Image (cartoon, rainbow over all chains, first blue to last red; front, side, top):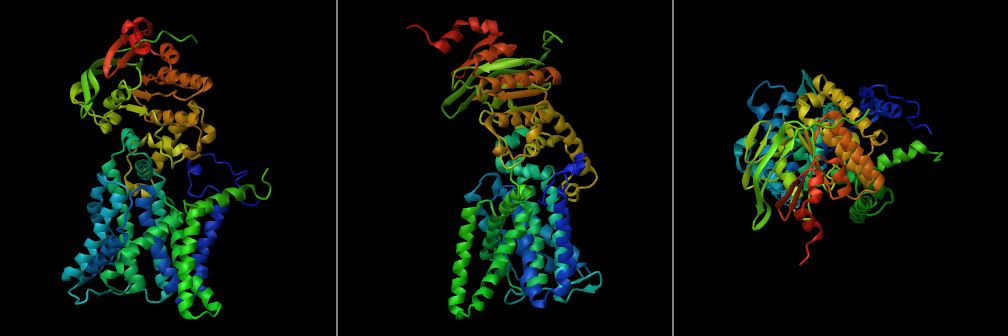
Length: 352
Length: 263
C-alpha cells in the first residue's frame, strides 16, 4: 500500500538509472544508514561490535568480492581466503617495511597485491570453466598458505608464522575502541560496495554478465573474454584482499596464515550462494545469515537451558537444515526472496 | 512512399575458395561468393549444408583452413570475432544467445560496448565520462527499442520473455552496434505467420532506414524469395547455386537438392 512507485515519473535517463529508483527505497536506505552510523554506535556494546558487527561487515566485503567473480562473471573460485591472506600479509609488510606509510594506502596496496595474484591464478579460467576451474583455484589456496608458512620474510621471521597487525592508526587518530573500528570498517565497506554497484551497472559489469551468460555471443559482440575474465579476477581479488587486511587489522589483530584456510573460502562461497549470486545486496544478506544465525541459535539454545554439548550439536543441525531449506525454497538466494517480497508488496493489499 | 528499387552498391564482402573442416568432416568445400553493400543476401540449403558454419566463418567464430576473406578493404585468411565486431559485423544466433540473467535494456546496451571508452575506475565512481556515456548510449538504445516496438519490456529479464520477443531483443542487441553488416541466422525459425511478418518488416526496415547490409539464413522459402536480392544455395558444404530468387527457383541443381531427383 505504501510501497509503490505510482506517480513517480522519470523524466530523464539519468533519473531512470538511479541505484534506488523508487522513493520509498531511498528513504529506507537513508534510514538504515542513519541507524548504522548514529544509532548503533550509541547503543551497541563492545561485544556486539567486535563479535558481530565488525566480522559481519568484513565477511560481507569478502562475499562481495567473490560475488563479483562468481555471481557476476560466472567464474567459480575456491581461493577467496587465499586472496584475503595476500591482502592481509601484504598490508602488514607494507606497513612494516615502509615507515610512515598511511594505513589506508597500505590496505589499497595490499588489495593491489591480491589483485595481481588474482590475475595470475585467473589465467586458467581462459581455458577451463566450472568445476574444473574451481579445482584449479584450490591451488591458490594451498600455494598462498604454503608460501606464507615457508617464506619467513613474509611473516617478518616470526617463528610460528603468526603476525601481529600494527596499530590501526589513520589521519593521526588511533582506532582503538570497538566502536571506532566499526565505523572505519563500515565506511570502507560502504565505499567499496557503492563502487561495486556502479561497476555492475556500467559497461564493465555488463561485460562480466555477458561472459557469464553466453560467452560466444559476448565475444561476437566485441567483448574480449581474456580481458573481461582477468579484470573480474583482479577486481574481485582486490575486494577480497582489502577484506583480508581488515580481517587482520580490525577484527583478529593477531593472525597466522592458517586463519585463511579452505574453510574460510567455503564459508564465503556459502555466503554468496545463500545471499544470492549476482547481487550486491545478496552479499550482505548472505554474510548476515552465516554470521548472525549461529549466534542467534546459540542464544536461543541457551535460553532453553540445554546442556552445552547438546546445544552446540543442535545448533549445527538446525543451521545445516536451514541452509538446505533456503537453497530448496529459493536457489537464487535471499536477495531474490527480498526482490519477490518487494514485487508482492507493490500490489499489497489490493492485488487486482 | 513507394519503395524505390533498391540499389545495391559495391561488393563489400568477398569470400573466395573457403574450405572448412572439423577433423575429417568437411563442413565447407571451396565456396566463393560476395555480398554487395545494402543488399539482402540469403543463404539457403538443406539441414547440415553448412549455412551456419558459413556465418561463423564470416564473423570469425570458425577459422577456415583455406580461402580468403576480403572485408573493410583488407584481405585476410580468417577473421577473428573482435575484428569482425570492430569492423561492424553484428549477428544473431540460431538458438537465441541472449544474456539470460540481464534485463532487455542491459542486453541491448551490451551491443554498444565497443563505443564505450570510460575506464573501470571512472565506472566505479560513476562520474564524468562514465555517466555521460551511459546516458548517451541509453538514448540511442531507446531509439532502437522504439524501432522494434519493445518499449513495454525494457526492464524485464530476458529469460522471462516468450520466444518471439527474445528473437526481437536479439535483433535489437545486434542493431545497437550500428553494424554495417548484419548476419541473421534463421531469424524466423519457430515463429507463426504474424510473427514472421513482423520480423520481415523489421528486417526490411533495418535494411531500408539504416542502409544495413543483411546476410540471412532462412528456411521459409516464401520469405527468402520475397525479401532477398540474391541467394546462395549450399548443399553438403558445396555451393550449388547463386543468383536472384528467380534464377534460383529455376535452377535444376537446387530443385534436385530440395526435392530429390528421379532415379
